[in-house]
Length: 178
Image (cartoon, rainbow, N blue to C red; front, side, top):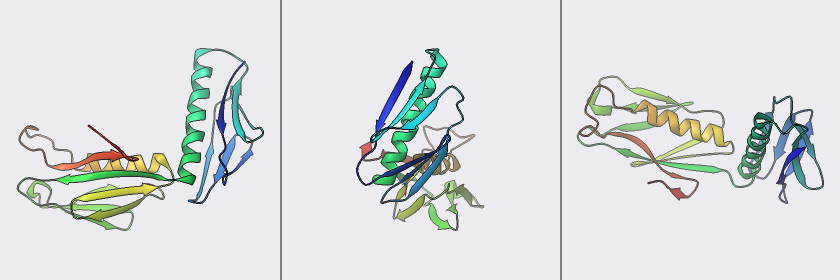
């Protein structure tokens, strides 16, 4: 029998209903359903315990995945996640603005029509000059919003050594990227 544990910190309440885990903290609430038939999840004296009766490679890997998701949920409702992106351009200054649940990118490489990137879930986007900050409770929503921004400004059909314009991720949760 294999099992993994995740400690529940003070100030966070965790509820389990079947295989649906609900985590509440000072930043918000996250709910996730785990659809792994071989895994059993239980809350035991301040810990989330994920176990499986078999020791098959795929079942043990699923335990690690569920434990990581639970850990990310706990971190998100306590401290949240913050990704920082930077706007780079050489000749054509980009105008980036938030309109509803989309980010509008005007004048990318001098293009006539704007490009758009979707804001996922409850992620919040703040734009100051050439810096974009994406914050939120869910790591998946924050990461996907940042990825959408990068993909919206991907340069195609041009020499990438010359055309280095775009929006690039520079910091993830306080850790600078190379």
